[in-house]
Image 1: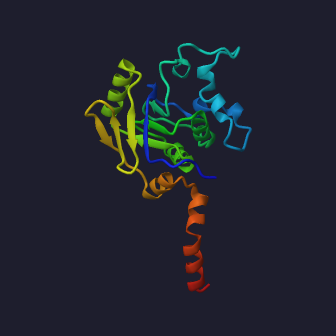
Image 2: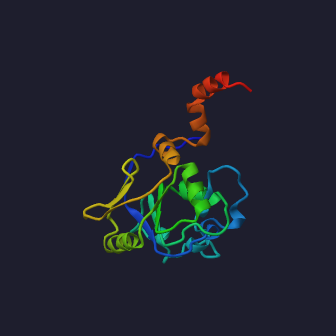
Image 3: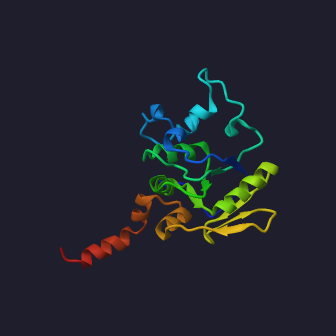
Length: 198
C-alpha cells in the first residue's frame, strides 16, 4: 500500500518538547488490536490527551488550538521502547507527515520511513531554535525539502541539512512502500532472472 509523495512540506508545527517519548506513550498497548493502519490516530498520545473520563486534558499540546500542522517536533530520543510499528501508524493516521527530533530510536525511525512519515534528525541547537520560535509565534512554518535534505524555519536564516538513506528517500519521493518499489522494477527483475542461471 503506497502513500502520498513527499517532495516539499511547508507547514506549521505541533511542538512537544519532551525527551524520551516512547512508543507506549505514542500509542498505548491496549490499542494495538487492529492489524490495518487506519484508526490509530484517534488514540495517538491517548493517555496524555485524555482524562480517564475521556475528557480532553486542556494542557496537552494536541488539545491546544494554537498549534496544528503536519509536522510534529519532539524532544531527544523520540520513539524509544517497544518496536511496535503501530506508533508510526498512529502518527501518520493523525495527519503528521514529518517528525523532527535531535535523536530517534532506530526501529521507530525505520517504521516511519516505511509508511511515508519523514523522520528528520537535527542538531540539539537547531531543535531548541525551532521550539523557541514556534512558542513565540505558533503560525511559524517549517519548510522540509526532501530532495535537498534541508529543513528551514520560514522567515529566518535558520536552515539545517539532514541525512536519509538513499533508498528510503527515493521511496518517499515517489510515494512507494517496499512492495510498490518492487512492482515498479518488476521488468528489471524479470530480465535479470531470465539472464541468470539457477
